Length: 275
Image 1 (cartoon, rainbow, N blue to C red):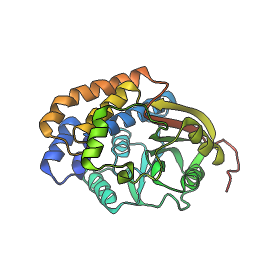
Image 2 (image 1 turned 135 degrees about the vertical axis):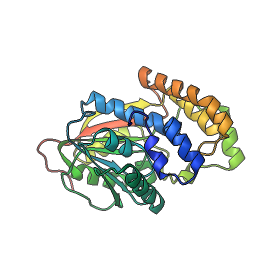
Image 3 (image 1 turned 180 degrees about the horizontal axis):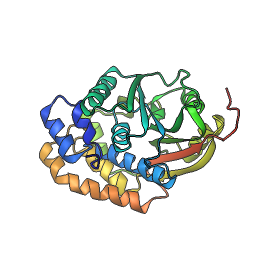
Image 4 (image 1 turned 90 degrees about the vertical axis):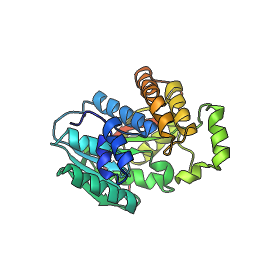
């Protein structure tokens, strides 16, 4: 079965309770689940979410479920995960072994270093660039690795951020949280800043839009305020259907102003990319 998004992560868990949670519910990190729904929606729009053989690169995606789900759903795809965190690489290797995903390759990479040349049909860089000082260099390397006509999809928190619930501020103060705790070197990107990154890499901008509108932001706020990655299991179980409903509304309604931004660019069929 591959219908339940995020179930693959069960094979990366050693704790039986979390393993059961992933197997029964799929991706437990609901904001990450919604982010992936937006990626899949975009790939459907581009007519790329199909069984036609493709090569997908999930850049910085060792902790996420997107690459595992794609590899399982489309056996004819070749899927590569690149990450530089030993813990996430080890987890990805466990998932690969557990699911016997022969079409999945796990690599330890530094995205700041030059990589492949004209290998990938699709590259996804989801909530990664805000962690890297040399963001423009990384996008140039990702562009270099795309086949002519290949697509790069980038997601990030947006700036400025919409208004969040007071509960979020309360929990941040309570636990002493700061965005740098997530390893962020910047708050995020505006739509224009994403376009500039694409332009500087010699890519053709196809679209840049906001995601996580009022419903998605509400879901994120409730998820964070009630424990984020370590919620009370009873509270989480009670709110889980509500999270999914808010995510579905966010996906279907769209927004002009949201807490995240999603950009799509294509490598020209014939071009000389900047150094």
